[in-house]
Structure formats: structure tokens, C-alpha cells
Image 1 (cartoon, helix red, strand yellow):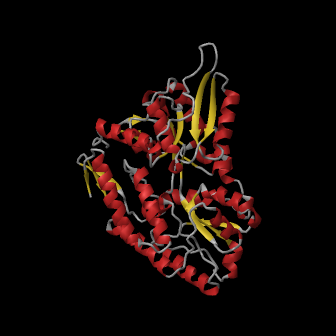
Image 2: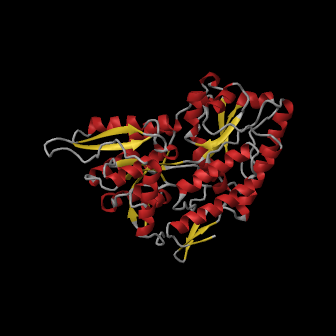
Image 3: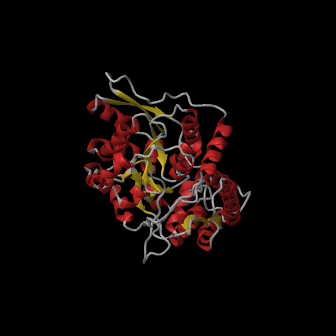
Length: 435
């Protein structure tokens, strides 16, 4: 489905990446050890809890030892570092790569084809997650998780401001936002941040696709009518000053949550432990409810994220790397750790019966929060497709979201700008594109 890519495009992306960084990675090659000792592999990623799964592996696999090196998150420089290391020939064997960025890595020739080492495990994963790690029939790693979205909210403060139940629809969300802000102009129902992938989840929910392929051409539809509908909704709340505009995952956001100035967050499953560790003083007062929907009679939810454990180009021990990647996503102890610490919703189907998914969460008042995410998954459209230039697209969108938050621009116009820049970038890479 990605047949529009060319060797020239891959070379252009690699060159551009190198120019952006101007430096090579300081990581080791992950090229193994003498035949007499264990195979040694490096693994770069940023998610909390990954190091603990690696430790579990190392205890039970003395012949293959993994070193986990924590990098900046992909969007904060991690991906650029990985791509630069591939080009320099000193990349790790394993890397945490979001589904949204895998097409870009594939276009850059930065991934190792491990189809033969992974194909027997395909049936162990939800079909759509396997599709996320497979491009043009080649599989480049193992899916780890999906990221259904929900509403994390303060039960006590909702009650204080007369919200008897969490908003089930976006109309109710807007009404509750107005109600809270009218009662106290320093308090907000939620925050409008600058995370492009959180916004992607809102578009995903609304069926507002960004990319597609047909007739060996890419289509870009960031500025479509359905996308404008989503943008207009959030712009309406911003125009009325009904949302706080702290940057996503910024200390200011958690300070405002801790002080009761922000009452909720619409975010992915993995945000639940982040909130829990960031506002510990309000433990027990939080709860999780389904994400508000556009149509209560036909509920559809969004997805914000999901990662693969990818095998990078040049790995001298791709078979062992693939073995670890599959193990991390399917081993019961590893999965339990990733559920508790990382906040994953597993991509492996057997992992959905892991006891950790049904454990009460003290921070959320003893609620079995994964019940909410589990109920939503059947109502997530799994046909969403990421484009080949998500690093650029997400950066441009994040800039635009920040400007919209400060009043410097309007969301509908932001989408038009991002559409234009994305199409230009894809054409520059030699891709055939309409839109």
C-alpha cells in the first residue's frame, strides 16, 4: 500500500535527518558479542516500565542480554537520534517506534525486515496492530499496545460544580465547560494542549482521516469537511475561553490539576499512570469515564498512540531482536508490568485476559479503569492510516495548536496550513500525492 515510495525519497529523508542533527549517536551498535558469550542487544526507548520488562527478560534469557537506554521521546528528538544512528551505522538493534512514525522509518530505509522471524506470531495479535508493523508485506517488529482514549476526571470537583455525571457527548462537554467556568472563572473543565497526536485521536474518533492511499497515490485530507468540524468545535470552546491552554504534559498542567483549576483530561490509556504520578495529592478523587462522543446513539471512540518494538537496519542479530520484541508483548509478567507501569492496553490478544487489567486502581478510587478502555475498543475505527511524513506533520500541527491556544491563529486555518506543508513535503520526497 506504500508503493509510491522511492529510493530517492528514502535517501532524501535520511540526508535531511542528518542535516537536522549534525551529530551521530553515542550509542553502541548492538552488534553482539563473541560466539562464546551471550548475544548483547541495545534497545532505545522512552516509555516508563520498559526497563523493567527488559530486566525480566535478562533474568530468564542468559544467552541474549538486552541493555535498555532511555532516550528523549520520539517527538522530542528520540526519532532523529535513531535515524541518525542508522545512517552512521551504530544504531541499536531495537527501538520503541510509534505506529504513526513507522512509515517514515520505512521510507528512510531505517528498518530491518524480520518477516521470517515474526510471521508465526501474527495470529497472537489484533489484526489491525499487526498491520501497523507491516508495510508492503514486510514486518519490521512487534506491536506493543493500542491507546483507546477516555475522560480522566475529578469526581469530587465535578460534584462541587454541579456536574452529576461525566459528559457523555461533546455537546454535554461544552455545556459542562461553560457551567464550571461561569461558577469560577479561574477553573476549567479541561485543557487544550499542543500535542498533535492527542488531537489526532480526536480526529480519528470523528472519522476525519488525514491520509489514505488509492491507485498508487497518497491522499492527504487534513483539511476535509470532517476535520473542519472537529477544529470548529474546539475553536468554539477556545473563543469562549472555556479551556485552559497549558502545553501538553507541561508542569503547569499538573500544577493546575493539583490545585483544582483543571478538572479533567481527555487522553489515552497511557495517560492514566502519568496523572497518577503527577498529582499524587488527589489520589482517590479521580475516576475514568468513556471519552465524550459525537452521537450517543452510535458511540465511536478515538485512539491516541500505540508503539512497536522495531528492529532497526543493520542489526547483526535480527532473529534474537525479533524474539525479544515478541516476548515483551506477549509474556504474561512483561505484559503485567507494562500495564501497571506504562499504562498500555495490550496488542496481544491473549494479554487481554491478564489479571493486571482487572485490578482496582487506588488512585482512581478503586475503579477497575481498564473496563472502560476494554468496552471502548469495539467502537474504534481501526482503518485509520498514518502518512509517511508524520514527524513533519506533527511538528507543524503542534506549532499550530499552540498558536491557537494563545489566540495567535484559528484551528480551521491551522489545518489548511498543515495540509499545504504536508503535501509539499511529500512531493519533495518524491511521493505521488493528491490533496
